[in-house]
Image 1 (cartoon, rainbow, N blue to C red):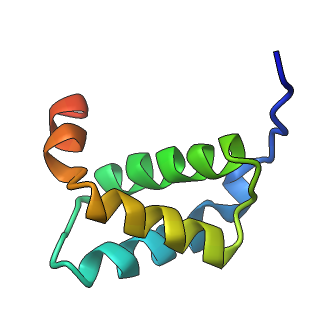
Image 2: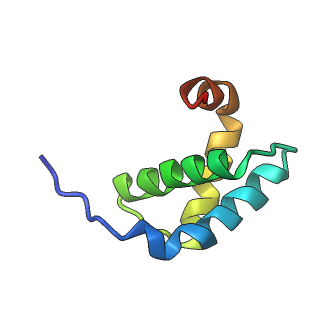
Length: 81
C-alpha cells in the first residue's frame, strides 16, 4: 500500500472553500456552508490522493472536474441531513 501524505486541512480549509465556492458559482451552484465544507474537504482529499496539495490551481481544477461530471445529484444524495 502506498503512503498518502496527510496535510492538516484546518490550516487550508477556508481558502480552499472560497476557491470551491467561486468555481461552482460559475455554474450557478449554491450550497449551504455545511455542504460547501463537506465538498471542499472531499476535493482536498482527492487532491492529496492524486499526489497533489492544496494549491489554488489543484483545488480549482478538481472542482471544475466535479462540476463537469455533474456531481450535484450524487453529492446531495450522499449528504442528505
